[in-house]
Amino acid sequence: MKIDRLIGILSILLQEEKITEQELADRFEVSRRTIIRDMEDLSKAGIPLTSSQGIGGGVSIMSGYRMDRTLLTSKDMRMILAGLRSLDSVGGSSYYGQLMEKIQSGSSELISGRDSILIDLASWYKDTLAPKIETIQDAIENRHLITFNYYAPSGDSIRTIEPYYIVFKWTSWYVWGWCLKRKDFRMFKLNRMDKLKETAKEFECRTIPAPDFSSTGVFPERIKVKALFAPDVKWRLIEEYGPDCYKEEEDGRLLLEIEHTDEENLIGWIMTFGDRAELIEPVSVRKKISELLNKMTSMYGKG
Image (tube, rainbow, N blue to C red; front, side, top):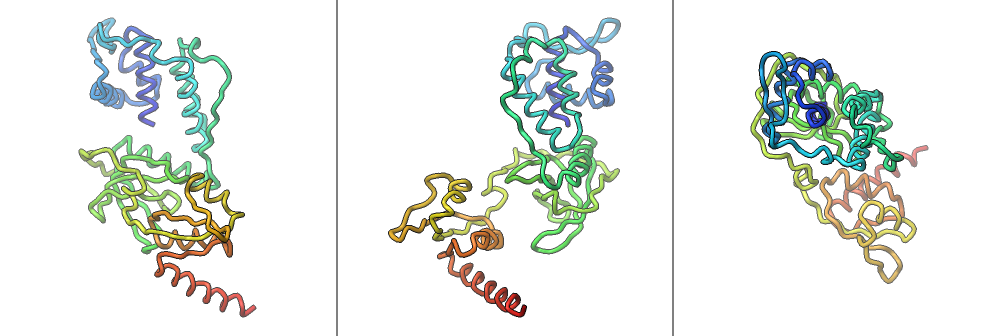
């Protein structure tokens, strides 16, 4: 919510010589205090802003440093619009589309041509995800702690965190924040959260480096995997790991050698191939799959 407002404010400042903080607050339907914070963030980002008091006063980009209005081309604006629409697909509202209408005022010459990119980030869990995303956005904006019940392979727990980022990664939505229980930064999957609440307790933002959202950063465990696949599932290997991920063996099967991040996830993934895949290594995981199959045979054999 904040980043799109910053884009909107910058667009307005590029179009107008001067505007008051209250006018910006009214336009974006936030408090004047929030706009002041936004101005501070823009200044930290290197935008030279200046303000003047009294009649005819307001905020503007410093004279002599004004950026060329052609900084955003027609293609740039269409890409921004595609991104904003994709966020609407998550929340099921038209908030970001309405925001785009606000910031494109006076820039109609930049919005031309037919849309060439359509992004839909919605999922089967749209109805439950949208309220969670909105609650977390508000908490980040207000710098309030959030609490929730969390369900993970390690067990159920109640967590309280300082929320900093909402992340779309690995086809799922997460919140990244400082966990008061673990005394460290953690990534929490929104679909595993229940009874999410924004508290009234404020927190001071920590000085932190940019979070590492790579798979190695979030999932440091690395499991070396070797598996053989039937030729008719080649499309899945290419879809998930690329066209050069495998080697064809003499018997026609496809050898895949990769690194995986989680043992339980690896077992589940291999099982989705049924008899079209055979895990060779690690031997310990191969043994667990064998034990699991024996239990399943016993359970389903009773019928």
